[in-house]
Amino acid sequence: MVLLSWVISYLIGSISFSYLIAKKVAGIDIRSHGSGNAGATNTLRVLGKGPGIAVLILDALKGLIAMGITHLITGDPAAYAVSGLFAIAGHNWPIFFGFRGGKGIATTLGVALGFSPIAFLIGAVLAVLVIAVTRYVSLGSLVLVTTIPITVYVLGKPIAFFWTSLILAVFAYVRHYNNIRNLLAGTERKLGEKSNRKLS
Image (cartoon, rainbow, N blue to C red; front, side, top):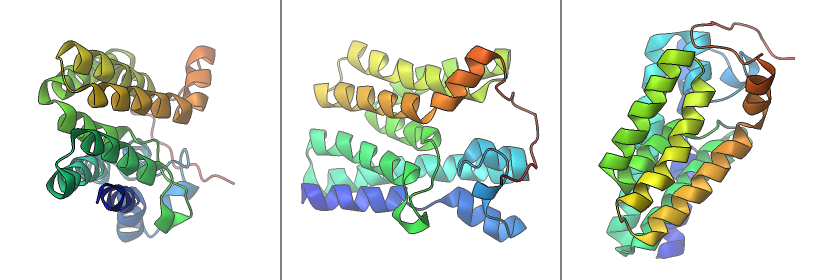
């Protein structure tokens, strides 16, 4: 049942709301526009606030729903925690969309909420503050994923939550490799810089 719950979590994560909403709203493949990323930030840049917020909420719900289903099926805290990773893996490498997805931050928000509402709140507030000050969404995202394992540990949550959130942070850093390079080089795009550039 644990393996089944993880497969379900991956499949839920593989539903690319960015791709689906972009197709519905604008008739485009979001992965061929802007940064080429199938996520909330690129949707915001290419399609505007409404679609961007919708993708953010729906992608976050993927993580929370996947973990909720795993809890109902298994009742195992470790399986519950790891199912969040599978949901994020599905978002990043979706089987339904040629394994070309997003960077998993919105889904991570849902997973963080599943770990601890307090950890979620602390991470989200810090991320929003960083984004508000710097206008770098990528930097705020990295602050979020760095904060979650720390707060989960300090709050005394199950050790499986801590280790899973640590792996989750590694996932995010790997997916943000180019963003980190751009941040260090001073070439990272800031929030509000609308992009309609089509990728070749």
